[in-house]
Image (cartoon, rainbow, N blue to C red):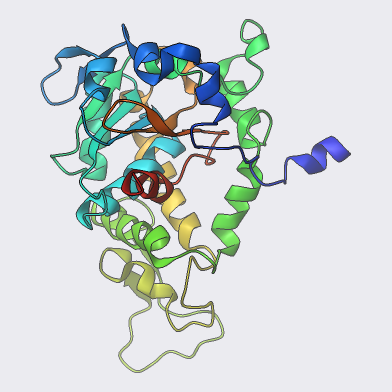
Amino acid sequence: LIALLDIFSAPPEEPTGKDAPGLRALGAAGVLGSLKGCTIEALRDGSAVDAASVAATGATTVLLFVTHFGDFNSWEVAQQLRSAVRANRLGGAKLAVVGIGTVAAGRKFAEMLELPQDVPLYADPRGACHAALGFSNGALPEYREQLNPYLRVFLMLLGVGSPGTIRTVLGGYVGNSSLSKERVAWVDEALKQGAAKGRFPTSVPQRLPWEAKKPGEDDMVELAVAGSAVWDGRGFGETGTRPFELATVRLQNMVSGIIANWNELKPPDDELLVRQGGAVVLDGQGQAVYFCRDKGILTYPPVEDVLAAARGI
């Protein structure tokens, strides 16, 4: 019973600075040494490059190693990044995003989410970077020969080998009023962008069941226009995320985004379905000052935290 209750706990916290456990595990090689020899492919032209050369910019560099291109984590990280780039919150840092999958899958991912053209995107068909940096293998990797990766993904959705997932999913339905404006700006943009691209739902009821209809008022409101404003002035609070607000983004991502385009987005190896990602910030000397690993599904490093670490150098 105690073990079952544990799936509702918050994601475990760990240091993300130079004392990060994942960073210490890399030893003397560090991030750059570990990435050396990992080949990734630029989405721009399909050219193959060494990941270490992409990371070694000689300046503050933000490296986002996202999960495969058809995963909840990669979609939300990309949506947060899109909002941050449009708001010029990178603070002058260099940027690279490496996702698990093929170049074709990465291009489909970037097109669906309308990521800015100046965001450097790379495909890692084998998840080599993620393995080299010691990111999580997902649920029950010791049973990979016995358990289908799709089953292991399902178990992760239930919180097995994915601590904090259940709580994070529920948080999308109940909301979180404590989040800052910078942390939730992406939700409004994602709702509008998703609806404009035709991802269900594109509209929601104009009124709550107990609200009276105003003269001339439509029954439905278009999310492509209203976005998060649908929740304004409805008694749900005016800060953070409101009930069902983030859950609506996730529904758009899941139904008309990921599921509808699964064959184009999924990685070439099913075992990569459970491979998790993480985020790294390097200083101008190539030393990691921030290192954070995904804990599981929907428990990834918030982009705003990553960028704050980069701005703090």
